[in-house]
Amino acid sequence: MRRKRKGFTLIELLTVVVIIGMLAAFVAPKIFKGLGKAKHDIAKSKMALIEQGLARFFYDCGRFPTDAEGLEALIIMPDELEGKWDGRYCKESELIDPWQNPYQYFAGSGELGDKEYELLSLGADGVEGGEGDNADITND
Image 1: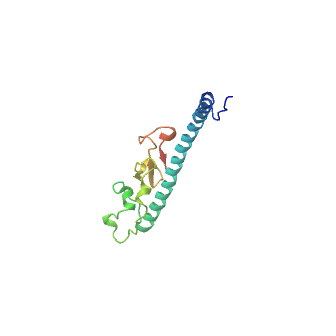
Image 2: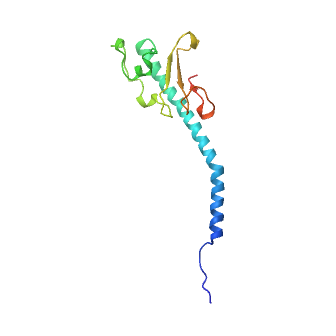
Image 3: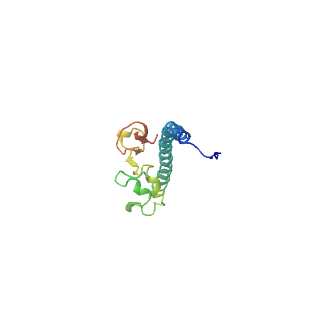
C-alpha cells in the first residue's frame, strides 16, 4: 500500500513562480512611475516652503536675497542685514530637492519679467531640460 504524500509538485511550484513573475512585471512599472510623481510633488511642496521663507525675509529685511547671497541668506545672516534679519527662515534640509541637489535661486532681473525671483530644481537627472522625472521644476 502506498502512502499519500502531502505537498506540491515541481510543476505546481513553477506555475506559481511564473504567475508571480508576470504580476511583478505589470505592477512594478506603475509603482516606480508613482514614485517619480511623488518626488515631483515633494519638490513643489519644498519650493512653497522656500517661498514662504523668502516672503518672511523680504518682510524683515525689505528686499529679497541677491544672487550672490542665494538661499544661504535664509539660514545665515548676511553681514549688511545686522538688526533687520530675524531668521532662520528655512531649515537647511528644505533647500535640498528630493534628488539631493540644492535648489537654484535667481534674483529678479529684467529677464524674469515681473517675477521677483526664480527657484529651480533640475529634476532627477540634475541637468537643465528633460522630460518626465528629469523635467525641470520651477516656481510659478
